[in-house]
Length: 399
Image 1 (cartoon, rainbow, N blue to C red):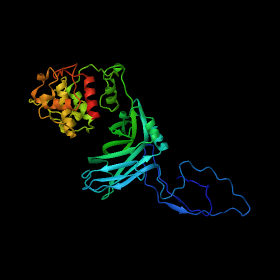
Image 2: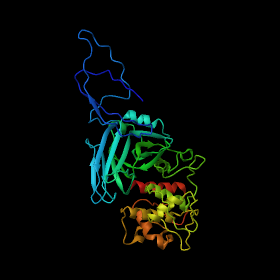
Image 3: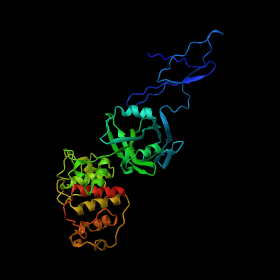
Image 4: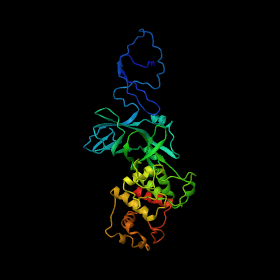
């Protein structure tokens, strides 16, 4: 049992107290019932009262409108059949909930924590190398109104927007490398996406937890001065391209079909799937299985007529272009050519393009994602390198 004494009070003034407990992971209990009271002056008329004792650090008088640890908050409810947008009073945060994201009415709460609360939570976190927090911890929660059960995942992505302060923006090195990170129970951080548009971070999300905005600066010793250094660093910062166990990137090494498929899957922020990808040469023990399954579900990759995917085969430039074009169509941002061969006329080796890849390569060229090798060669059958793969995915992401 804990007793807290507050002597820093003024007689004749009514105070209301509400007490809740919070652990280091940020979980908060329901507050106890608010209690009100008015202290009276018990000192003799001519006798001065003793100096007040120091007030306990974690307890202070609050009013029913005190937002607690949150500096800005969103409150509102969804409708299963209607698009809903809710925002904080100052407009610095907003949450768009599309129709069909939930099966029932759900109450949403989004809270931006104070700097002190954010620092306390990050003390126990293990962020990736090169990570710098930008702004506060954001706590998302949702509750079904029909049964008061918590809701943590949704059938359609929600769109969250957060306005960054001038101080936050001043501390950013590269706006393209800023994103939202989920704070996991073990203290690790997982990148979940987001793009900085002006001074607002825009994120598509389908899972609720604690998050923080951050910037990650990542590089590798063997890409310094490389023609693809900027694109590789961008994709590493966004957790799309990863280094070798040696700590190097190995930019000129060939990239496999599985490696490129999962890079594209990560760039699209596809959630790994436990479904069977459906290939005879891919098993659940393969490290890429769940991300490849997500790429299959999204229509980015298909296998061969014999039922194989050949995950360890080196991917060619035209195969990368086909996967990229499919990803662009999924996003609805494609310019189709009525005569694909006309798009390829500037390349001396245009005739080397496979018939099944022609339309997709034309799309990738017109969208500025696939470019030539040298002055006039497309090299569609050439094996792709890890640097080329990272660059093409970076151009796709920039679209």
